Length: 218
Image (tube, rainbow, N blue to C red; front, side, top):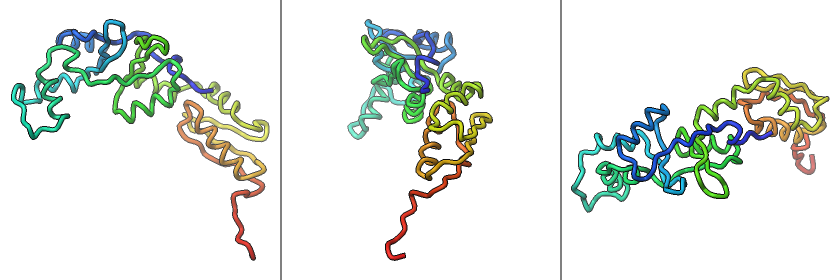
């Protein structure tokens, strides 16, 4: 069973409006103990994110008013944000979002790829922000009760009666026999895809190696 964002997300939309001041952004971060807040428009649709790194530009960027023709667009944007005083000026955009139906595995990959620790969750129909997915919410998947995790693993096995499954701190050991090596490989990959599985120890023995190609004439 694939665990989706709606199963683990926080129901509080941690956000500020586009015209929120520097102080209001800091207050929101302090109140919810987070390192970033989503910036929303008047319709509650995410338009960007302000992180602690964005706020630190106020102190780290020595140039506030002068612009060099040799600067890259990214560097020029940093200067503009350093001079900003409102969320719309300080934010990084566009906002990276997920929906309640996004799988937790896909959300985790997105967090890793974009180097973010939280994602705004939006309603599919309206685009409005309805919650926040935190890195800690994603990591909770890997502390699922062993019995619950084993039940999901057995649900993907083609012949659960012929196989033995052991779960230890998210590491799954599968043993038993199957007819073909291709079945064993597909079996391990299916188990590895179950939400909460950290690794798979493959002790499945195939009766026949259907992946072995024997050269003609031998």
